Image (cartoon, rainbow, N blue to C red; front, side, top):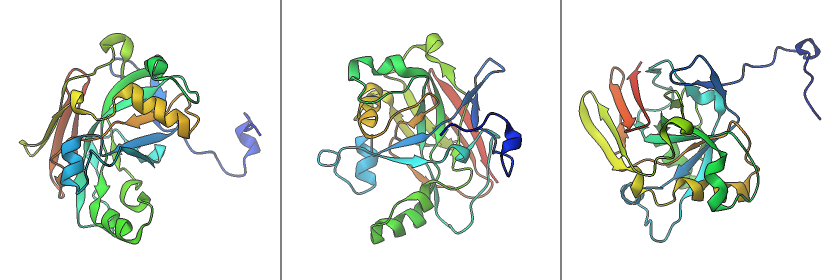
Length: 234
């Protein structure tokens, strides 16, 4: 059933569509879903206690309205161990199912930078109980993001430094060429599990060095050649 176009037909006002800004433009990119790739850098998989040679990357979701672009990350309640994870964003302009790897990049609109903020203590409790991770991953403001840059301007980056500093100290450093699953492979695999849609965002995984933040910290990061991100913990 299609949603009515007349908003007066709703019993309450429909929520706003989450969006990301386009760098250098006044246009916006509407977000449909956010897929996150787990353990996509070998050294990060190892630091989290997993063997990347035995465990392929997997996917979980954040909610579209977890995205914030204000430059401030509000420290969340119910946690005393909140971690940063810097990642490249992949924004899709076309969807589909069972997309061949060789056709996958045709579905990409552009790229950006995001933080997969994680309530690590709550995630750890969920892991021990064999429960889903949403409480640790999909909380309010858990996805601070940059704007997007169209692939028509920067191409499809397959290498480039991925880094994050906290209060000026380098904490995470890697390179896109270290990803276990490359962007076309992620898109192809995901499209076998879900029907991908225009507006889908993929957070492509984080390099080693994740760690805790506290109120007042400043996080500065980038994917070189794509975008930068500057976020203060409130």
